[in-house]
Amino acid sequence: MINVLTPDIYNKIAAGEVVDRPYSVVKELVENAIDAGATEIVVETERGGKGCIRVTDNGCGIAKEELPLAYASHATSKLSSAKDLFAIRTLGFRGEAVASVAAVSRMQIVSRTAEKEAYSLACEGGILGSVQPAAGAEGTCVTVKDLFYNVPARLKFLKSDAQEEADIAGVMARFILSRPEIAFTCLADGKMKYRSFGDGLSAALVAVYGAETLKNCTEIRAEKHGIRLYGFLGNRNFYKANRTYQSLFVNGRYVVNQTVGAAVSNAYASYLMKRQYPFYVLFLDVPPEIVDVNVHPNKADVRFADNQIIYGCVYSIVSAVLDGNSRALEYLANAPAAAPSSMQEVPAAAPAAVEREMSYETAKATLAFDVRMPQAPPKLYDAPPARLEVRQPAAAAPTPASSEDVFAENQRFLREQEHRARQERVDPASLEYKGELFQTYLIYQAGDDAYFIDQHAAHERILFDRLREKTEHRAVVSQPMLVPFVLSLNAQEFAFLEKNFSVLRELGFEAEEFGDTSVRVLAVPADLMGIDLSAFFREVLFSMESLRAIRLADILKDRLATAACKAAVKGGERLTAEEAKQLIERMDGDVGMKCPHGRPAVVKMKKSELEKLFKRIV
Ligand code: ADP
Ligand code: MG
Image (cartoon, rainbow, N blue to C red; front, side, top):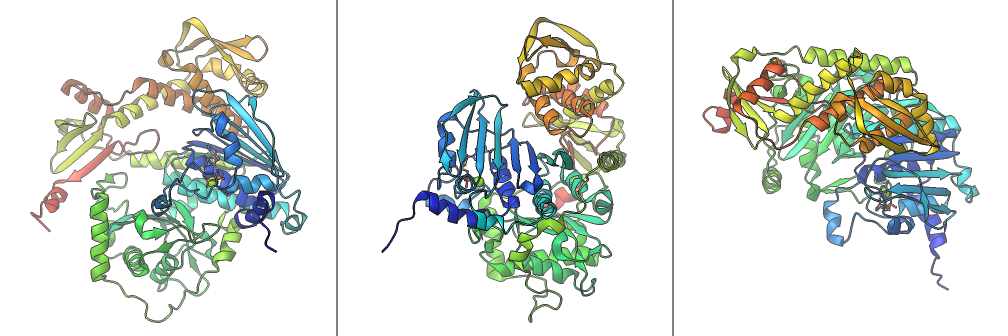
C-alpha cells in the first residue's frame, strides 16, 4: 500500500535533511536574514542552541498576509520558475527551512515590513497559531525554542552544549567572513562571541581570527578568464594543524569543494610538510551559469561546469603569489611596487556578462594554462571528508573574541592599520582638476597618475571624521526642536534608552520620559537637524539591543556620525569646479581614504595602465 505522507511527517523527515543540529538552524535563519537584505544581524543562543536560538535582522520583513506562507513547505519568495534555478543568487531557494524547523520546535516569527505594523505568528511542532499584532522594529526576529522536543531520536544525537555552541560559532565565523558588509553580533548565553561592523573584509578577518592572523596573511585580488579570486592567503610559514582554517566561498556561499581545495593545497605543497595545512579565506566568483549549487542537501558543495578551468585558475594564481614571482604583482591586493599599501588599484574593468562568458568559453576551448595539472593524485591532498568538515566547522572558529579586551584590541589594531594606510598622501596642490563623470566621480591628475574620487564617499568620510571628533570631544551643539518628537517604544526599548539618557545628553540629545514607555526628544545635535528621527532611533535601538556587552556610548557615536552623514550627503549632485576644489582641499591629499563603510573613496590609475588598455604598451 502506498501512503501519501502527511505534511507533518514529510516535514519531520525533511528536517533531517536540512536541520540536524542547532548550528544548521542558525545557518538557515541567518541565510534568510541575508536574503532579506539585512545590514545588521544579531544571533543569540542559549545552551548551545538547544534552549533557544534567536536571529534578529533589519531586512525587508514579511508582510502580515505572507507570514503563514513563510511556514509552508516549498513556499519561497526567491524562485518562481525552474528557469531561475540556473541563476540562483539568493542563499535559500528550496522554501523548506522554516517549515522543517517549525515542525520540530516551538518557533515564533515577529516581522515588520517598511510601512506596516509588526505581526507575529507562532508555530509549535508544526501546528500553526494565528497572526497577532506585535511590537517590533522593521525587519524580522525569529525565535526557535526547544529544538527537537518532539523528535527524541534526534535529541539523542546532539552534542554537549559547549560543542554545539562551538559549532554555531564556526558557522557564524563563516558568515562574518563571507558578508563583510553586514554587521553581525553573536551572543551565546548572553556573552559576546563575535562582533563585526560591516566595514570590510580585513576587519571581518580580524573579528574572527584576531589581528595576528591578518598580519600573517597576504591579501589577493585576481581576475582570470572571467573568474575572480580574492581574499586572504596565509603566508608560507603560517600553517595550521588541520584543514578547518580553510574557508572557501563560491559566489558568496561557503562550500567545501574538492577542485578548489586541491588547487590551493597543491599550490602550497612545496612549502608545507605533511600535516601542515594552509590557512586561507578565499572567495571565488564565477558566472552563475557555470556553477551548480543544487547538488547537496546541505548546500555545502557546488559543481563546476568545467573543473579543469577552475583548478587551473586557482592553482596558477595561488602559486604565483606563494612563489612570489612577477606575475604575483597582478594578484596582490596591496602589491608594494604596483600600488602603495592603501591604494585601491583600478580593478580590471568588470566585463559585461557576455564577455565574461566568452572569455571563459575561450579558456575552455584552449585550456591555455601555464600550470602544472596534476597527473596522478596529488601528493599532499586527499579528498576532504566534506561531510565531516561540514559537521565540524567548530574548529574553524578560533577562540572567539569573547572578552571586551580582545574586542577593544581588534578595534585599535584596525584603526592603526587604517591610520597607516592613510599616510599615503599626495600634495593637494599637485592635483589638477580635470572634470567630473556621471555626477559622481571627480577626476584629478597628478603627474603620471590619474585619481578618480567618489565625491559622495569622500564627503561622507570627511563629515564622519569631523562629527566623530566632535562627539569624542563632547563639542556637540545641541539644538532645541520646535516640536518635540515622541518615540513610542516597547518596554524593553524604553528601559534601554532610559538607562542611557545621560549618554544621550552628552551627545547632544535632550530626552525625557513621556508617559508609560514613551520618550520625548526635546533637542538634538545640530548636525542631525532635519533627519528622520524615528529611523535614526530605530537603528540606535537595534544596535543597543545587540550590544549589551560593549559600550553603548561608542555605538551611539558611530550611529550619530553615520546618521549625520546620511543627512548631509546627497547623491547625484553636480559639484561646481569650486566645490570640487574645496572637497580635495578638505581631503588634504589623503588618497587612501575610505568611506565610513570601508569602500574606497579614491581610485588611482597610472598613465601606463591606460596605455596598456589602448595597447600602446604591453
Ligand atoms: P527559502 O529561504 O528557501 O525561500 P525558507 O523556508 O528558509 O525558504 O523561508 C521561506 C520564506 O520565508 C522565504 O522565501 C522568505 O520569503 C520568508 N522569510 C524567511 N525568513 C525571512 C526573513 N528573515 N526576512 C524576510 N523574509 C523571510
Ligand atoms: Mg531559507
